[in-house]
Image (cartoon, rainbow, N blue to C red; front, side):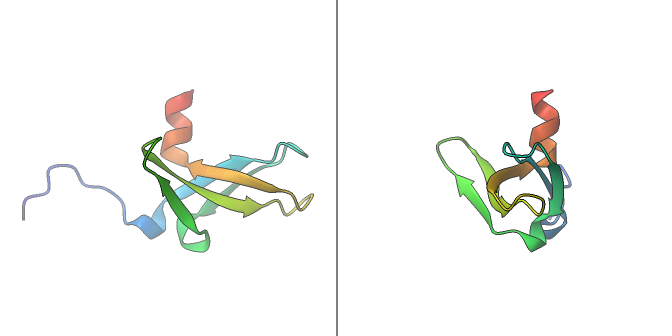
Length: 69
């Protein structure tokens, strides 16, 4: 098989998110998260619990975070 664009294995992808309750910013590898896909938005996301304040927040792949800037 010919590789046109080489991607990353799913378990090595890094997700980033910000807790809106305490403003902490976290990163985590996808292998430690339950990653979900949203067909309507065309992307992936993961739910996480903030280790600082205990509130839930959403993380998105770091590549997608970079696109927004």
